[in-house]
Image 1 (cartoon, each protein chain N blue to C red):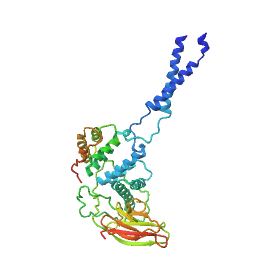
Image 2: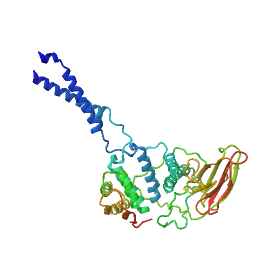
Image 3: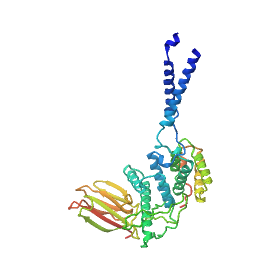
Image 4: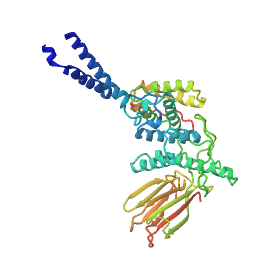
Length: 283
Length: 131
């Protein structure tokens, strides 16, 4: 009689207790753990790390198809942009310039690869990277840069780029070694509004005239203030492109590469426009 | 009568546990993103180790290689990680130069005795670099 008066609350109690235990187990003590995951599912910081490794591995072996396949695994909407943005972030956050340079060089190389793929079927001139002196056996630890990209005025078209196998070895693309100073070939005020006000645009080309990525650019101003950045962070414009935003009333000095003459007296032009300065490797 | 209530009570607990587990494991699992490298499939992990090996072969910086390996699997000794990658690479018939790069890395991380953190002595070890 007593038991009957208690009703069926014990069932609800058991259910709630069990539910609580089940939730604690499944959400806290032993949550789902994914195995056999793909790189695209990694957290952003690990994707950045992965991208960095791809760039450094490319710098080490020069195998562009392999680097491209590896980047595909991350499923970035635009791998080149992702590389360039990461390079900029790395520099902005005080990261290793070498890492940023590797990222920029890979971004530029990918850009060149696509442009080359576009220009090949048209039968136009197909510039190739000349095997520069000393590139057959570069010294250990030397700075290796991607081959200068082919730049054509033709906008990139969707072309069936050959799908690379996953473990091909380098296809004899000798890395570049910067061994000559850069000489300024053009210095021009741009007052037609085609560039943002106060912008300092630097374009760097190699000996063969092709845009050169990964070249360090140092801008100095004021009392010991400086900014170091690299070409190739905006591969969609040109692999040899870099820019800097000047403040009005400040005079800047620019140096390209590591052994070049400094170009001083750069400030926002009187017309309120921008500067466009071009350099060529070795003059 | 009393025994029946006890059985029903435990049955309701079991039902609740089942519902809780189903919620966390089946109906509302964590999203398939923001994962850690330790969850990578073996072939992807092997390729990541290969990247570390390629970078190491070029720059010869063992502490950096160890740091990268520890990112891939923080709770696993680097030597074991590289050995597993080497096995996977052999199974997948990687090219000989890739196997060689992995072997070089395996040899380099061997003396660490599985320690994830490189010692000062290791930082001075600079193996031959093949450009």
